[in-house]
Image (cartoon, rainbow, N blue to C red):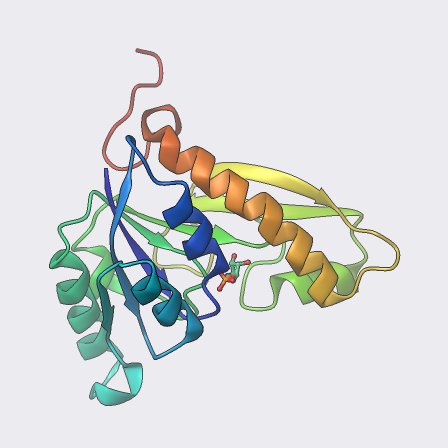
Length: 193
Ligand code: GRF
C-alpha cells in the first residue's frame, strides 16, 4: 500500500510511520501546507516532499485542488493526515473517496477540533486517547477506524498528556497501516473473509 502523509507540525508521527514501514506499506510522499519541521524530517528520511502553501493560493477551493493534485502525483492507495492542521474540503476529498484517514489526539466523538488535548484536560476526563478515523467534510466527524485509550494523570499538563497520547497514537496508526485489510482502509476490506 502506497501512503502519502499530510503534515503541518513537528512530524514525530511521520517519523515513526516511516521507521515502521515494510512489506505492508511504504510512505511514497509527504505533502505539507507550509514549511515545518515535519517537512525537514521527511526530507532527511529520503521521502519526496511537496509544500502547497495555503497563503500562496487565491482561495480555499483553489488550495484544495492544488493539494489534491500534489497528492495524486504520488499515486497513493491511502492518504494519512498526521498532524495536518487544515480542514480538507470537497475539492480534495472527492478525488480520494474513502482513502483519506486522520489521527486525532482524543477519543472521538469527544473533543473534536484543534485543541483536543487541552479540552479533554479542562473537562476533567480521566481517560482520553487517540482515534484513527476516515475523513469526511466535517471536523473530526468521519467513521471511526481504531482507538487507543490513555489515562489522564492528576499532574498532567497539556504537554505531558499530549506526549503520552502521541506514544499511543504512533502505535495505533502503525497497527492500522500494517493491517489495512483488518481495518478496512486503503480500499482493501478483508473483514469477514
Ligand atoms: C498528533 O497528536 C496529531 O493527532 C495531532 O497533532 C499531533 C501531531 O504531532 N493532530 P507530530 O507533528 O507528528 O509530532
